[in-house]
Amino acid sequence: MISEETSGIYQWIIYVFNLFTRCLLFAASHGVIEWANVAKLLNYQLPATWEKTTEKKMRFTLLRETEEYNSIVTKFNEAMTGKYTEIVRIERIQNETWYMQYLTHHLEFKSRLGMDTEQRLYHGSTKEAADDIVKSWFNRSFAGVNGTVYGVGVYFSSNAAYSHGYARPNENGERNMFVARVLVGKTTPGNSSMKTPPTGSDSTTDGKHIFVTYHDVQAYAEYLITYK
Image (cartoon, rainbow, N blue to C red; front, side):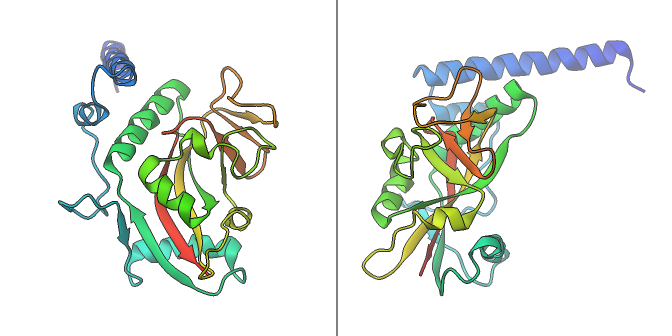
């Protein structure tokens, strides 16, 4: 059984670590320290599935026979069966700078809210927008592109069939949909006049499956599904 003294020391260690983390977040957000260095100081690791490369490459096509590929298809099919004829490819997005910033914010959200509010959601887009997102993240230039009913931000949904409506086909009939890790945080019902979430909230929602974010690194594009 843990003594009261030991418990107190443990709580103090947690407090100091959280304070240290917040100081790093503050310094990084004001350009005093690089985000990549914050990640190293906090001992963040890149996903084990990521491929090592010396090239400036961010998109890696998954092999169809892998568990990674099949897990994405299985989840995708829960809402999309009968709505497409072929998956052309699934690409893993390896944008290290974006990923490290996302992880740092993930830690800040968990520390502030006392829980993990990360969800895996979908975002449909055109091919041109998909190319930009991989390089430039879900930045504010995409705000309102997939609607403004629940706020003027970037829209995600837990229902792939909903995001399918925004995955407009190119000249070859190919559509693009991201599988993203999203920090919904403390969410509140949204409306079309909201350009930022209300004070105390991190995202807005329809109360069902739609979530709207307002910060560039509040979401990370984990995979890009190209399908017909």
